[in-house]
Length: 433
Image 1 (tube, rainbow, N blue to C red):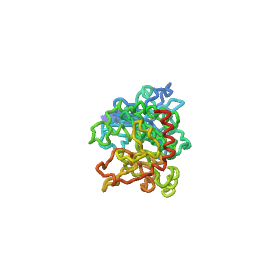
Image 2: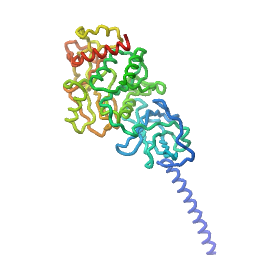
Image 3: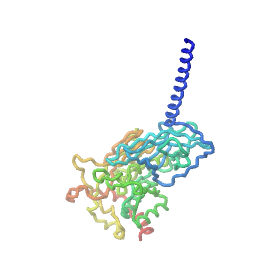
Image 4: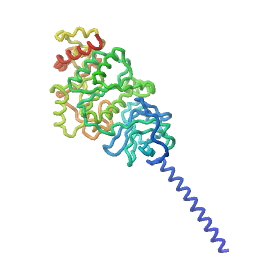
């Protein structure tokens, strides 16, 4: 009797032990499918279709991919710039394929939605993908599941894998061009002012513009000044031309401006010493120095720990005119758009009203940027005094009821009139006239 009881006990214990092993093995495999892992797939040589569009929708995830960038400033990751729905985005996984063996490495994407969405449901986001330690992948795919066939996923080339030696001093990143943009004269004047002040490259995220504007863009592309990034965001989302959701209840604000600016920072991180972040109708205008290079040299010397320099925006109403007879530029009257040389009166500061700022940044110090400030950085931010520089913003008046005598006459832009007039005339001869 005792023998039978012992046998039953051993059988039951063995069953329980085997069952426990099965449960532990199941949990182990399930848990590891959600963690970084390497899964060899025989015969897979990292094929998959290479993504060719600026914006790529990841089906069924409320996610749009712009571009991935290698980022080893803190750890070895791929930072994927994208747009997501801040509430309805699904779990995402990063698929890396290691050459030459075709080993697949899958890691869970940490989804970091930028804090500045201004109430819109969709906003800029970083998908942070831990990279494999045993290889430096050139491509990544993004999926809503950790298993499957990588050949069925779009592949994105990982940029910044091999940093360049900063061949450019200043790059201007402009907010998206949209609304059939047609302010040709002011655009050409801005391009020529940027070049006079030191810009070697201007990046434009183009959604739409007029035919005449296209001719101007083609000129600057051929010249090597402008790089166009197609920005077909209207094909994917219901976009607003306003900055806050309360003003226009659409999917995303200002044609995805914040996402474009972040992409531009990373795109030029190892190409340009400095990056300027501003709108098409804005010029960061030095008040004491002839150009940006001399100005920034002084600012860096005074602020050795800084990497973000913020400049106050000041409105020069385009409805208040000054005579430009001395410049002999009456031919410009035939060109669509605003003539900035006619607008030398700026509005005074308003009491208790925030003056928005735009920036010159060291892109290698920026983690995430918004429109008027950097959200996360590896360096300090500095507010640049108005006696050093300001943003010349020629636009509709914000204080339209002010009499002319209450405005501040500021002819700083006229210091550049000789070079500006000559350069603009040359461009107009080749594009408009």
